[in-house]
Length: 143
Image 1 (cartoon, rainbow, N blue to C red):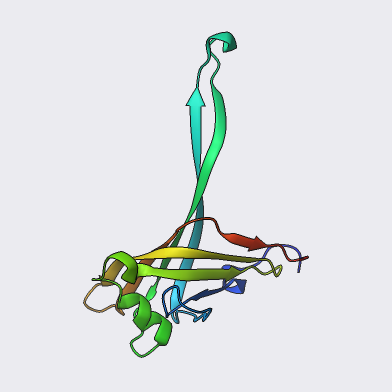
Image 2 (spheres, rainbow, N blue to C red):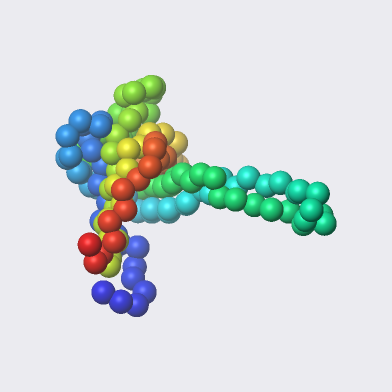
């Protein structure tokens, strides 16, 4: 596949068994997915650089912001919503994304439910973030 692609061409899944096994379940009625790659850059200004700053990328993390509607009875949706009031290891899972070109990103994650409810005449929302926990596995489409 080449050219530009709509966001709905991404396929994502969450492991509803936490970090046990390799099950991947879609969270039905997700309407937004935004991937942020957070770079950790260290800066220093050595005396021999005449005031110019040096930098080195020393780490990275991924944060994926998800939004959608609360769909009771859907396994993925129920799993994520059920994490709203849990802490610790209970919020650990595995997240995967398959991009339109066939490349795949899989990583251990922590799930943080950020929104439930909504306006009185709206469909109840479900907002959550997926934060990487350790180094992800990225498999290019050609592999």
